[in-house]
Image (cartoon, rainbow, N blue to C red; front, top):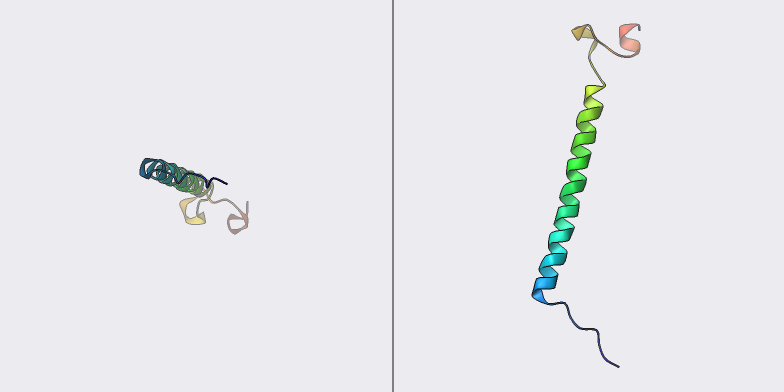
Length: 56
């Protein structure tokens, strides 16, 4: 039986690069979602509050 060929250093580098890009994309997406969620919340003292603390 032949053993599977080991990946070349270039293939290892390409795989690592793809992994890092995927992780960066996920972090960017989470950051953007967090920023969007923050835009939906305001505080009563700004006169634009949302929710039970404003009585609205």
